[in-house]
Length: 361
Image 1: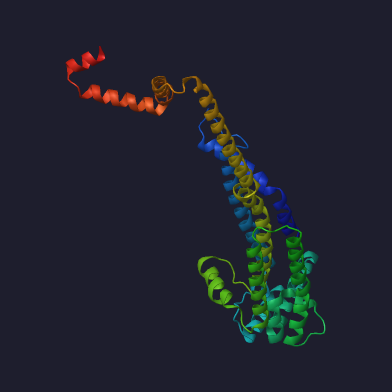
Image 2: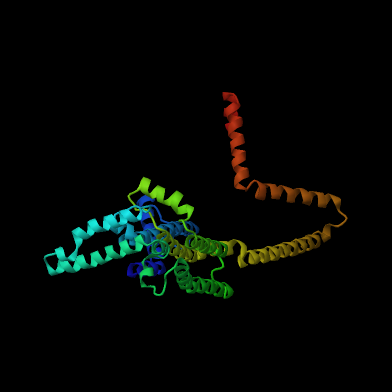
């Protein structure tokens, strides 16, 4: 419980801390010594930080799921305690218990410490044998775990289901109430669809697992065969699958909360108030350009007033203005000058030697 709590607390500071370390390490590898690094706040720096932050969040999400699975393996289950497969029958359960009891019975221990440890282990073996030998208790154990040993006044499958489902009401009811309240006040807007979808899928999986006589197909036909064929991981029981589903769902919701600022800020920069500000600035620039154009035409007409009626002077003035525009505006443009230089070089390269020298002279 303490390790799980620490992993959840780690979400508050570890992703940002690790992102800073990884980004600095990344720049130390890909940027040569002496070359400038992207400065904090620059677009390139923010792009790199966003990508690294997403990768760190995904990695921490996978780690917390692995940590939950590791805790389940450490706790073990009654089948592992007896060293039996999940489809074992009652006779093999009792025979296996008698063999282990003959080895680990507390009366066979010589020291006090060994006697105490053997007594605790023998009690666990006894609970495993009593639970798995009873079909009703075995059904309840595979779906609700060792908590059923503390339940009282239960004797049928219906009793176990009633007590187990009642214990889940605060979990699901509280989760729904929290999500609705946070959405109502404006939080958790980004990824809301995925939250409700995954929450509904987990609820449906749990309802199916608890009420069916056999494990869900995703566990019996996919997960357990893959685990036993590809790894040394023991097969999962239904209640262990549900524990992993609960912890993975909670961790996924936390990861969505960490990712939300990264994507909502990007969307706001493209579709938010800045777009409206840019639109207003374009409108003002257009109005200013139109005003300047009208003012320029008025000033030009005022300057041309002394030459009204004199076509020769007006034509001469237009020619001089045109020549001035060509010399000082068009030819002064870097691209135009570069194109003219390439054309002159090409003409010189194709001319005879004497012509090139005369052209040069």
